Image (tube, rainbow, N blue to C red; front, side, top):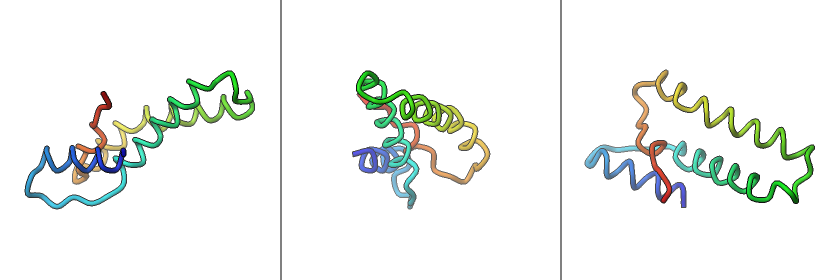
Length: 83
């Protein structure tokens, strides 16, 4: 779903331009995994929970910096917001 949503946002934002890549899908999956970890925090062992959530937060927090460093990248898929 995140791949379709990211691609749809890219097409809507830049109609007529060719866009390829998986960043929208990957960041959508990372966000969904973070939500899963937080929602199920009581059933996940601490040994898995802390590093998993910490790494996902770092990845998602650094994402705007990484996008800013590569200006030729189509960033609209990463701007997709879930309802």
